Image (cartoon, rainbow, N blue to C red):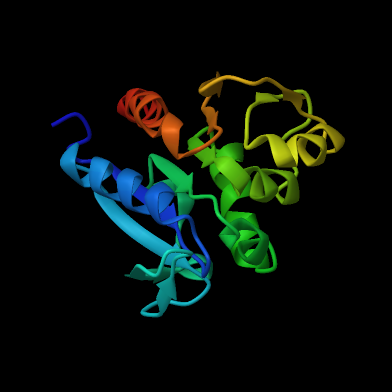
Length: 174
């Protein structure tokens, strides 16, 4: 299994895009990763836009980035709620600073902007937040997946296969 012995984080908050949480979560498990679902609080149930639920296994404030190979941020409206929690934003910033994989899809670029890790980086996202990312200093492109070092971004659920291939490939080298 490609990620045996690796630990990964999938961030969670209410109003996540159900596909953008479920697909990466199970794909990481399938690849053999130990996956932690990290939210503002441990043991809390969060609800997706389509009604699925997911329970956090850890609180962002209690997670040590050194222990993880990568982090995935699902889209939906959850990133706008996530970025209101300093510990969640700080986790993204620290994972990037440590050279870990940071992957964001759809509206998750909002978390990257709040973490202030976009200056002179090339990213993609759902087109509606293009201006937000450019204002945060990013170079924005319209393609299914963009890899800028260990920063991996995609646009929509349709891009999930390409997104997760890139994430798993990058995490193998982490």
